[in-house]
Length: 362
Image (cartoon, rainbow, N blue to C red):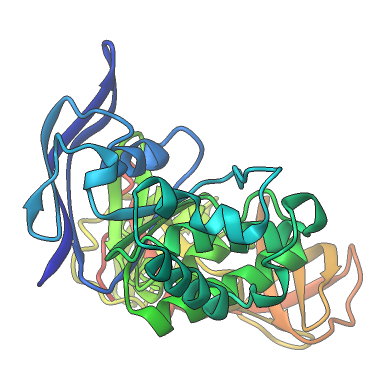
């Protein structure tokens, strides 16, 4: 892999508190990678270390084939977009875009070329003479992206750039950022706690927890084959259903014993399941539950129905356990009604209850 950014055995600490531990990450040239995780997991700290805004305690950071561990931020060949727009309020959009280039002493015609190109890519042409106070939130963020874009670098860093926008603007800017990446082909490293941003933007996602990457993979791998219970529970809305029980093997095949009842696991390959009596957790996505007005191998009680337009989320009570089902279209049932359902175990996940690690690869 031709790595644009290589993070090698990096430790980051604030005093005695270690934020990132022995982290290795290879980011390919032209790749869009998302650092995803809850607040305090170390994702922004890692991004700041790549940018040179945070010192590392150990390890190395290579950018474009050069050891940039101790290089100044301006010498790293990166452009960064922050959560806050950080625009100069008295300058026009054009002046905001060109300020860094003017400070660097670039020729006037080069500055004009770069600003014009960025304005064209981000559709900022009609706004160049306006000040930030005359712009919407989405327009201000596009200017902030443009300010990084004019630097003409290979690697762009985004630190939760959409978190200050409303839902409609976030959706619009997501599309623009993805289109920008497709058009430019630059390497982009994007930090967010929003799984929708991660799933829609990334070539690969690095899910982080307590300064450690829990899983690195494509959005499909992260969603369908989570490496552990943390990743499984963090990705997905509504979240994955977890059914804890004891693994049993009998003449009919493997079963999950839950509250005195047995749930057949014949749809799951037996490899790596373990011996009889092992405590396991079955993970089933809400769309892997099929509700049936008649029949169904299992029976539950409807608790809450959430119409969401194109689909409906139905919350069930089964055997004292709350389960969520995601259905395409409308749902005619009502709360307190009894309903049958089936589980699609061919796409389910099985985890060790003690370690939380995934027990099957399929």
